[in-house]
Image 1 (spheres, rainbow, N blue to C red):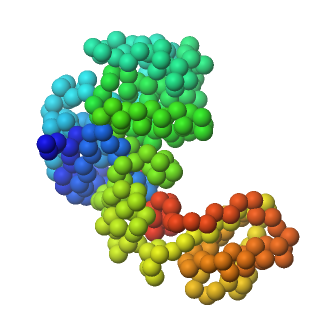
Image 2 (image 1 turned 90 degrees about the vertical axis):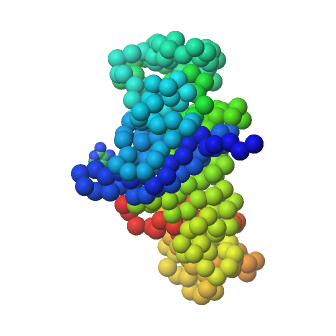
Image 3 (image 1 turned 180 degrees about the vertical axis):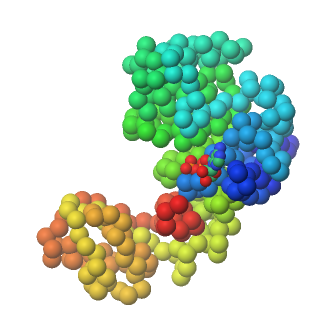
Length: 320
Ligand SMILES: Nc1ncnc2c1ncn2[C@@H]1O[C@H](COP(=O)(O)OP(=O)(O)OP(=O)(O)O)[C@@H](O)[C@H]1O
């Protein structure tokens, strides 16, 4: 049986003040699947998601959610779609738990709010008004509000932004559960680890267009329709050695100690990366170089490219 996608966007165009920020974008999200939309700041992710949520009208193109038009069929979609906005979008004077209970009462078969509040750790700030919640607390409440009505489609705009590691794990567990129950989850995120961990399908957007998509494995393998596999895929399979050090090091003179074919990059004062045909000799050379400077490596990661590497290869390293 062929299922129609939970979300289908074709040729979406949206401009603000004559500036096109979404420029012919296509996106498909399936039920029982997590779709992660990645892209640099200003790439057009939120605008796209807002068109799917019915909060904005497309200038051109077609958007369907559960086969319906998010703007024209907003009333029919409301009970079936959960939305967690980037800024929370919650009224500021209401207490956290009252907010959740109030929203739950609007649905015919809501989740139990006691259990939901417990699993997202809302009890600790149940009586605090939204305006006084910390950023991460507000995000947790917004997520609870988005899912309490048992939606079939959930849009999460940067769900774990500002959350502590414990809350992030709780959110990821909830997202996986929603997926396993057949919900279509569409999330935007800047946390590459989040996409790598959760996403069944990754869509990379830049300048309002999809520049690559596929499973995480597809993208890591250099597929996904990116520009010739991205700069990082040149020269065959590559390994990256990332070294964190206990104190700052300057990689300038490390370059001379290594094979010319290897790329050496200073990622921060205490993080360096060596990419290319990294072999046993490379590892020995790098650790010898550190030893000569009496610097302890606090972490050595030798492995395949990460989604972050792929993302940077696809979208470049300059600030937007
Ligand atoms: N209401 C608006 N009026 C004018 N410009 C807008 C409006 N909303 C968004 N923009 C602009 O449209 C572009 C795309 O914004 P959007 O929020 O969709 O990007 P994004 O990919 O979600 O970015 P971020 O990762 O920073 O959240 C940005 O340049 C933004 O400044």
